[in-house]
Image 1 (cartoon, rainbow, N blue to C red):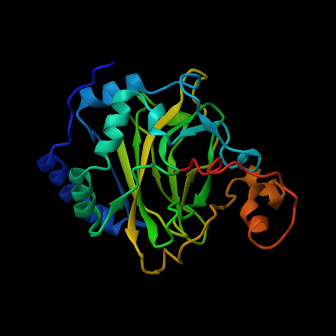
Image 2: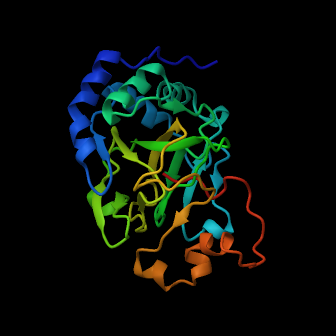
Length: 282
């Protein structure tokens, strides 16, 4: 049995970080977000990066045929039994009481709850040429009274170069422009509001070397019976993929926006999709 460090998040340190960034989170555009550098102690971040699984180390899940354009060269896994030991421990720290108190202070949102099953989140790894089409998230919890409200993405990419791309892009709700970009730098955590028109992704193919990947750990947070607002129109069971690049816009709509056909009554006789196969997004 592999021994792992007895690492636990420090309440006072986490509260200080939350207070430091709460105002910028609240006022950010196009929707509430922020990122925090040096998020974990450097030795802990280094251990997580060293332990992060490569493309052949675990039975990664891939997007199905209808998700090829949306999630090119992207791998994901939500099953904690496949997580390396220390990563598994820290993923549960991100669902701990200490972390929920941090999230409450950062976001101002009371009543946050976690998903110990990591539905749709967990580990995400994208290689050269990979991308994640701009999208607004689906409601992932099977209980329709439990609504996703915040995403956290923790990046583990040492010496990541600006020219390699992979920036998390946040778009306005009318999809006229990208209003914020967050580079996927080592030991950086990004937090953002999620809803039915909080569009995000990294739509440009990665230009990193073949032996490098954009690796992250992602966790989603929920509330019960989230009220409707300008950013949330209610529970829905599809990811709203939206083409923003010239390549995406040039594709047939059935390829670039499968949700249009899946949920507007058009019978395209598409092959069945494995559950959650296309849902490994941020």
